Length: 136
Image 1 (cartoon, helix red, strand yellow):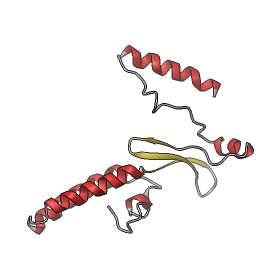
Image 2 (spheres, one colour):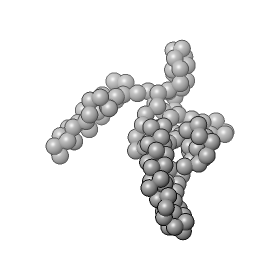
Image 3 (cartoon, rainbow, N blue to C red):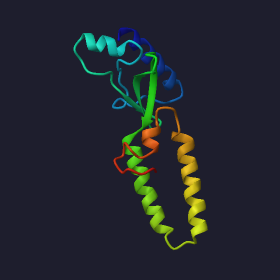
Image 4 (spheres, helix red, strand yellow):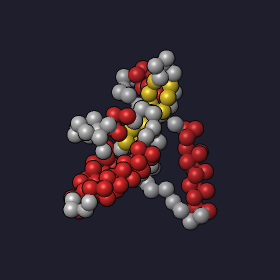
């Protein structure tokens, strides 16, 4: 953790040169990476912490052959917000011709799958983690 404090100071200085600052409530140091799970297990703690960035929750994982990998899944709040907005827009388009509805839904889904379609994010794309049982 001590080694992480100096890069944070460097980032603050770099951002200050552009007139920007880090948000104190959103900036934190977490134990994350290849050896985080092992060191936390030795101390009797649970899994390594996760963090949200750019609409994804990033977490430590393992490949099938046991190597470390950073996995990503759609942030829960983002998915709920997207489904709510999609439902409202579908209601607004209810009386439009079916071809127009199809074009609109296809464009929305292409954009969503293009951004969130990453390895290890299939359950969120399929709608399983949202508890709805259907895709976005």
